[in-house]
Image (cartoon, rainbow, N blue to C red; front, side):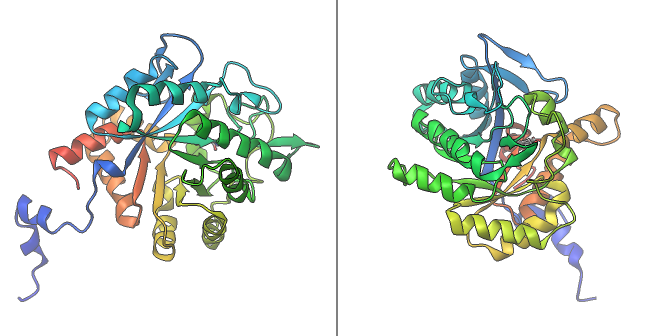
Amino acid sequence: MIERPRRLRNNEWIRKMTRETRVSANSLVLPFFIRHGKGVIEDIPSLENQKRYSVDTIVRGVEEGLKAGVNSFMLFGIPEYKDELGTQAYAEDGIIQQSIKTLKKEFGNDIYLITDVCLCEYTSHGHCGVIKDGFVDNDESLPLISETALSHVLAGCDMVAPSDMMDNRIKTIRATLDFHNFTNIPIMSYAAKYSSAFYGPFREVAGSTPQFGDRKSYQMDYHNRKEALKEVFLDISQGSDVVMIKPALSYLDIISKVSEKVNVPVAAYSVSGEYAMIKAAAKLNLIDEYCLMCETAISTFRAGANILISYYSKELAAAIIKGDIG
Ligand code: PBG
């Protein structure tokens, strides 16, 4: 027999030598939730092993990330007060704005800070934009979303990541940042963000479940694949530097298709429900958590992602350093 594919699987070294997918801890981003208060490091019941921090304790969270080999972080804020217009999202002394200042003062350029730009954690109704006649009004939302992005940049973040899925937001944010001379701050757009039940645990953490209706009038319908390309190309044409696909696991086909078609880096967001499912199955002893974490993460890179946003980033960095993956 000439063809014996098993020759390249004979032992660990040849398997590792011939791996087609290479990853590095530099490709990983770890999300953090920050709330009001002081001295807070609290468990999150729906997301085992993840914490909610306050502005003063988030330094500890980042320290642990750095120790594990992760340098990039994504910040989500949970404000004390919510209102119709989500004013805490763009307040100068808002949770995220304060956190950025604290972290940049402590770590400077040793960390790369990406901020989620959205209104849903800050609005009383839980939607990602302004409500007019019971509907999320696209164009009325844009100034508030770009104001939020600008306030993060003024506080010192390195990159903004708008997740609202309003039309034309990338153009508006780019114009706002450029107008204020922040021409060098990149935008990572949540370009193909699907309306997904995988966000359940996140919404519990952030208290951002819509108070009426759902997000289907702005987030994408999971039946659609071509539409992802439409969204991605629109965002790139408006100034998006990195495009994100979200969720990851049920959307590997989208990651694959998009990464073949675009000439910008592609990020995948392995969301809260994906993490929670692995944790829950592991608790029931149905699967091996570590192995499944590694396998699912590598599948996103194999599909074509260049960047992975994951609640497992610290553990994945350790697995890379150990040589189990990558
Ligand atoms: C804000 C936002 C959400 C997530 C990231 N940014 C929630 C949503 O759209 O409902 C979800 C992240 C996760 O589930 O881990 N719009």
